[in-house]
Length: 531
Ligand SMILES: *[C@@H]1O[C@H](CO)[C@@H](O)[C@H](O)[C@H]1NC(C)=O
Ligand SMILES: *[C@@H]1O[C@H](CO)[C@@H](O)[C@H](O)[C@H]1NC(C)=O
Ligand SMILES: *[C@@H]1O[C@H](CO)[C@@H](O)[C@H](O)[C@H]1NC(C)=O
Ligand SMILES: *[C@@H]1O[C@H](CO)[C@@H](O)[C@H](O)[C@H]1NC(C)=O
Ligand SMILES: *[C@@H]1O[C@H](CO)[C@@H](O)[C@H](O)[C@H]1NC(C)=O
Ligand SMILES: *[C@@H]1O[C@H](CO)[C@@H](O)[C@H](O)[C@H]1NC(C)=O
Ligand SMILES: *[C@@H]1O[C@H](CO)[C@@H](O)[C@H](O)[C@H]1NC(C)=O
Ligand SMILES: *[C@@H]1O[C@H](CO)[C@@H](O)[C@H](O)[C@H]1NC(C)=O
Ligand SMILES: *[C@@H]1O[C@H](CO)[C@@H](O)[C@H](O)[C@H]1NC(C)=O
Ligand SMILES: *[C@@H]1O[C@H](CO)[C@@H](O)[C@H](O)[C@H]1NC(C)=O
Ligand SMILES: *[C@@H]1O[C@H](CO)[C@@H](O)[C@H](O)[C@H]1NC(C)=O
Ligand SMILES: *[C@@H]1O[C@H](CO)[C@@H](O)[C@H](O)[C@H]1NC(C)=O
Image (cartoon, rainbow, N blue to C red):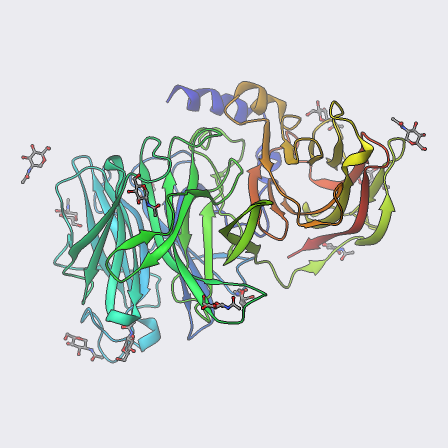
């Protein structure tokens, strides 16, 4: 805990007002205290409300017991209202760890009498952690998800392990059974259980030692995802198993991998031995699927931080946010000209925001090395919200640059104080999208090399126009201290946080290039928003 000592010093260096002004507007944060994994994500179809619970300690800005389930609700998945602690531990050395929520419409658990409407029969299944054990417990809510009563027969699963956590439960319609995926973390095993009543659980299979193992597996999630194929109107789907690994990401720390396969109610069988990466950024972990979505679409959210530095990031009086909610499909996508793989396609959900400031839309613009395009988003009132998006479709002509060129299309994101900025872009020889966050809060970046300055993701063209000309698409959503990048309409995603030392927000997009006659902006749009 030495690192926390130094963080305190750096926090004292900035005023509270400055440090708290970088709170994102449409990414869920707790008012104060510590937050990590998303828990119990579900949609209430009766009231049209999204519920998010999370690993929470209101009394600490670093992870510390007792961990409870914090709770926030939203009408639109963009603006959130905090509702207080929903499930707390009865002991300061123990915690209510990650878990899930299901709607027990048919009262299979027997927890509900007729005064609780079918759509409000909310059951939470979570890990109870003590210094000597991790067991799975059940609790139910009689007040629409604000508070929960613990089942008197807890624990419902006890395998005498200290590393057995994160139950994710869903209803499997074909066999009318509840299914649980839960991690025996340090055995690299996802256990699958079945239950008829959410209380008695039977182990039915294990998915062991697949993909990247790292130190441990966490927060397994299994969901059926529709395949979108524009060339075939037959509706098909595959199952996707998500496994979070921490530490052990190839770029350091925490990450989420997934496997595509089939599921028969008991056993998950991958279609290949390939593991795939859900998000190529540094800040996307403990991904969870939302239960009971409006039309059974696949929506998920993650914790937007990394265990390598989550306790050190310069925010106060809270630490961490969620990612935006994403809507997922599977699509056949080329990984190279000869291979096609079923990949998850991520679409961010952020609707109904009010445009605020100047928005831009331009088309067919060539880029030269001696000119840059500058877009001031703040507008005539010179008001910067720090929340904006941009979408850039461009072509790259590889005959216009040499193998030794750094053939870059740069996008600089700058605030009023241009001493600190983000740089991102595309490089034509490597065919990679890069993000450089090393020119942000110097006190933090220089003192914590684990807060990787540069990250990149190798991509393929969205479209090939000729042997040398290819088209790529980069969409970015910036919300004060977090940037989510969606490349080629969500084929590649990279989520990364960043911090400016003076609470300065980005208000300008500057596009330039280091090579002539290479890049053409086919379409560019950008807009600033307020909530
Ligand atoms: C936070 O601290 C206060 C004061 O010590 C205590 O009463 C409260 O129970 C704590 N809350 C949690 C969730 O630990
Ligand atoms: C806390 O609750 C657990 C079950 O959730 C129970 O086993 C334990 O005895 C309780 N501890 C105290 C101090 O009440
Ligand atoms: C509830 O019961 C109906 C009718 O038997 C069934 O179709 C449905 O799958 C059940 N759903 C749940 C969540 O138990
Ligand atoms: C739910 O099941 C319990 C236990 O069987 C029963 O007591 C209760 O009446 C049931 N609730 C409804 C609405 O049927
Ligand atoms: C539980 O595990 C501990 C540590 O591995 C072992 O000492 C103990 O005998 C086990 N208890 C039971 C009931 O299996
Ligand atoms: C469309 O998909 C279905 C289901 O996978 C398959 O049976 C069928 O052959 C496909 N049709 C074409 C034209 O590819
Ligand atoms: C995965 O690898 C194992 C071990 O090499 C092999 O037995 C299995 O058939 C492979 N599975 C698939 C789906 O390729
Ligand atoms: C998710 O995407 C599907 C397909 O485009 C759409 O029908 C659904 O409304 C989306 N869900 C949300 C919550 O945006
Ligand atoms: C932008 O949002 C701010 C804060 O909500 C508001 O005060 C301002 O009037 C808005 N400006 C425009 C041009 O909409
Ligand atoms: C790129 O083209 C512009 C305009 O023709 C010219 O001014 C500039 O010097 C060129 N840069 C390079 C590196 O060739
Ligand atoms: C806009 O506001 C910033 C301070 O927020 C100020 O430094 C800058 O000069 C203003 N720009 C204009 C054009 O008024
Ligand atoms: C601009 O940012 C730099 C680096 O954080 C800082 O040293 C400088 O004081 C800032 N300037 C203003 C006018 O805030």
